[in-house]
Length: 601
Image (cartoon, rainbow, N blue to C red; front, side, top):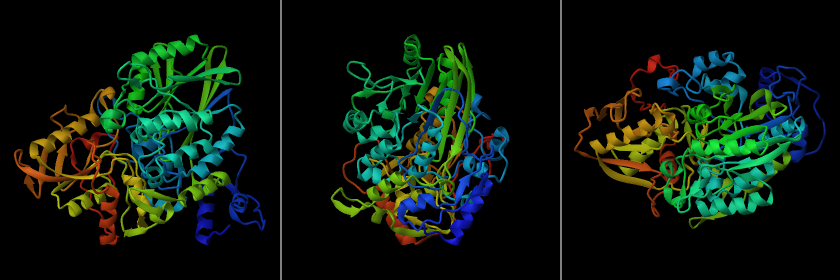
């Protein structure tokens, strides 16, 4: 294996921080991926402080990852410093950041886990601990955990096929489908999967998944004409002679948050009454364990756990919340565990149940950060990823080798680039600035997507980094004239989606990112009253005046135009260096008293 001294020392530092020891090195003269898998030199101690040595417990085990957003390689991903909760959600998980998050979960500051779960000292810690995720590393960890847990199921919470990947866009998601098969998933639900279109989704399920005995479940997606379920609502699995029901819950607002022309004949929704009927049905069929594989978002999951009885655990996603301990929600029949497993392949959740008689008698839970420097990549997955990325494809009339295109260096960044957070991140700011310059606009809007990886100061921004921020199936850039009244209405609508006091009216995602325009927001106000002030170039926005507004990812069908990734790439090639970014963050009224906000330099 070829490893620089710096990489070797970084590996030792990460291993020491995580409770690993230096074991004897394999001095084999073999070369290639097999040699790499045998000569890492870092092996786990048989001790309780090794984060990956988790003894099996009970007789039913479930492994869960979600929202990987087609990230097959290890990446950096900064957690938010702004994740505001309102009303009863204020100060409760997942709406805790920074110091308050660490204190709530008893995680030491400046530790490897503090880096995994918070934004704090991100750039320095990322250099120390290295990248996270990567399907080859995730595959190794899954195999290790499964080896001690016979019959364990691997659940995929959705947002796997896309939303942040060039190879996914260019292969029509086949790159991720093949990776899922190789990873060994058992059950899946969806959200961004639907943006490939209903025909493509059904084709994958009825061919690739069927061939490999993978179940796609979603109780809340029905045909508009006959109101019949489009997918299996649940699947019954037997684990160590115990009947386990996995009920699917796809993202309820898919045709609102994403273009409805992708799924013109399907209706979505939360449908908690139908969920209760399904829970009752599987219990009658003998299910001793009932788990909902959800893509609701955590606040919605927490409410559903109160509303619907008989669920042992909701293993959720969509809002990218990395929660190291389940939230136990009391309801009329007992308690439901609510689990959210982060994003980007950064975490693997392991839920062990001890089932006695007809019910769960106990549980243990582990949320394992996937540190690439601590885990030997699985040779088969590593080889698949390398070969897939090296393929030549033709996309929209252009033929290219995917790896070559993705590795183009566009600019160097002096600042940390990130997206995740309720308001503008620095990578969002780059996109907004690019839209204004390249479209000659006064204002720019960029969607509040929670996907998109981070780039450390001093690193090159590559075309692949752009695709992690912009890679979706409706990327066309737009330029419109909007009045001040229209602009306020847009901001109010998105803010209500994010800060509504009833979780069932939230749609996940973050506030639309804004360039040029400055505004004030009070998240605790009601619809129509949250945006308290707007200005452009130091002057209040005129309600009746028209402004040139650039954007992308329109829910209207656009067949022609410039893809956002090409626009941003051109902007970065011209810039060459990204200087310290002036973040266009709104003035947030009441943020100082909210545990979901912490200052970030």
